[in-house]
Image 1 (tube, rainbow, N blue to C red):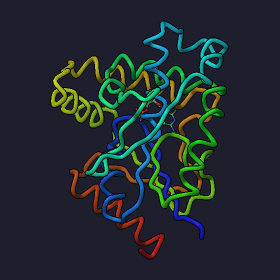
Image 2 (image 1 turned 30 degrees about the vertical axis):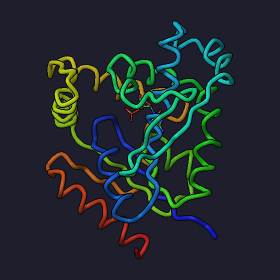
Image 3 (image 1 turned 135 degrees about the horizontal axis):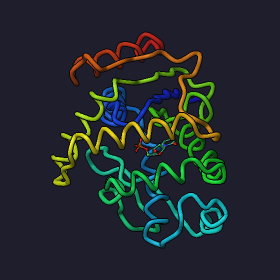
Length: 225
Ligand code: DC
């Protein structure tokens, strides 16, 4: 039996993870946060003092890396790197930069491609990332490009960092987001872009509940669920 695949792409801080997780819970789908996979690889490079932009060095250690997705009792995705739970560490700002660098490497992207597709073959999924609708699941049943202005995304990220106990100034976060947007959209390997057949959902003017409802409405209309 074929599975239902929902691809959600968009820039960092657009609320993809939280919204996709909520929608997956409402529909009984598996939620896959692919950014967390790139972050885990970035963390490994950071911990092992490997230059995350050195493709040969990164590619050489990929076979030694065991990346696993597990789900806790409340359905939250946890990331395991060589059997160690790294779900919290991968969220540190330093690791965001490493994740962005390794994600620009074709060797890393092709290494992860089949891993991601396999998850979508076995489960009904809501998968979020940057290239899910364009590269990973080009024939997904539903494709959504979730976005918000850079200012709104920076404000949301600031609140998130504060709640995690690692606050940062708005200026730093805003600068980081702009820089990451640029890198994600200008890289050669699977750059961030809206798939031609993706629906655009801009949440700049929406609060969380409104965004959640808008997202579920699109999914339900497209799948008949
Ligand atoms: O969504 P995020 O911020 O956790 O993603 C971390 C980094 O990984 C970000 O720089 C973009 C990159 N990424 C990617 O290139 N492709 C994906 N499918 C998911 C994330």
